[in-house]
Amino acid sequence: MNSDVTAVVVAAGSGVRLGGTVPKALRTIAGKALVRHAVDNLIAGGCSRVIVMIADSERQAFEEALQIAAPGPGVELAVGGEQRQDSVSNGLALVDTDFVLVHDAARPLVPSSLVAEIISQLRSGSDCVIPVLPVVDSIREVGADGRSSVIDRGRLRAVQTPQGFRTDVLVAAHRRVSELGVEVTDDAAAVETLGVEVQLIPGSEMALKVTRPIDLVIAEQLLKES
Image 1 (tube, rainbow, N blue to C red):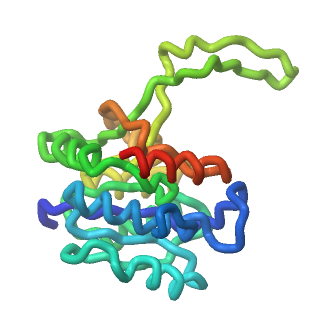
Image 2: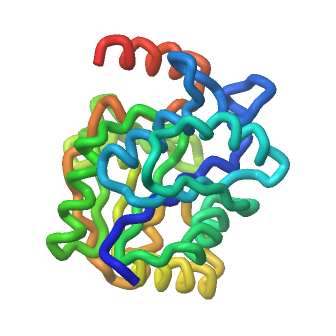
């Protein structure tokens, strides 16, 4: 192992809710694929290697989308799995650095400064660092009977990526959830099964997740204004 930082970028999903004929990660804003924006920002933030997890059938399209990504650090493709956690586990098997960031290609505009802060916190001794934002909408919890109740939004935070980890901790966490047969959509939740403390840091409005068609419009406008 070494003290460099690897990023595992999850891009194997189809992005059904976004529509279109290509995977979400290959949709474009400002002439570049979402995954290309994400990779460039991770490299600019200090990642020395980026592993992009894809569906094998889309390899050529991803190679074309990433061929002019920022030069220098290694950018490579690997085959993802059926579920998100399978893709992350596949990526972790290729990581040989002390620290790893897990990022969703659907968050293309994550600021390099946020990436750098997560890395800094890991180097300072944190096992798990995740960016979060306060929840601004009113939230109601709906029970099985259809009745609902208000949840105090002041205690809630929306979780973003990249999430940063000591690599050995995240590897152990994925092994643990696999043994338990638990499905997680958030790597910090996997780490918590080990009793590891999750450190929260302020996230960024720029790191929005592109899920619906309108999110592409918002992301494009944010990019123009940045």
